[in-house]
Length: 204
Image 1 (cartoon, one colour):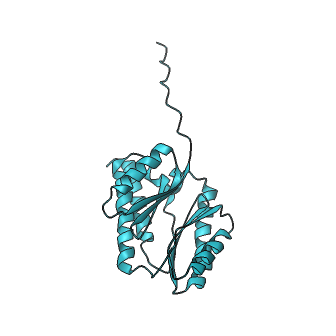
Image 2 (cartoon, one colour):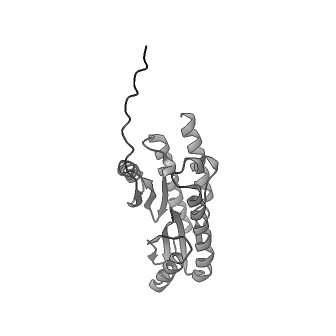
């Protein structure tokens, strides 16, 4: 494995280990300096996303208590909510709280109504996330740090600032990982980079 991709693999593995815990409210965590440097988001936006996740987790946790399990992911100030709540009213209130957190631009509420997922189900989701990230690194189709992966009930959510081509490649990879039921794209799209022009030949 080339050294840059080995560094990426280590960073991604750390992110999976950090997100592998299972409290009732989970906010995604940032990885080390390598990930920060290669991220397409400005550093201030990366820090804002961390603040959003922490603030939302602290506000939502006391509300849901034992009546839900909510994962909170923020990318470029867009928030994704996944997990379960026991009532529609609680689901709506969680979304309202997340939307009121400073700097949040929008909320995608994918929380399901029903019983809380078992620890075994959450462990399977963590394993799927890890498998998809490993495939991103191994296939070398795009920089895997540009795509955030969230898995809930074997449904994979993809977030990030990506080109249309990168979105298609990430979706294709995720769909073909064994155990994935569905892939949901919550991307923000950026223009394709300009084609490389051949450099002028140096005068002899």
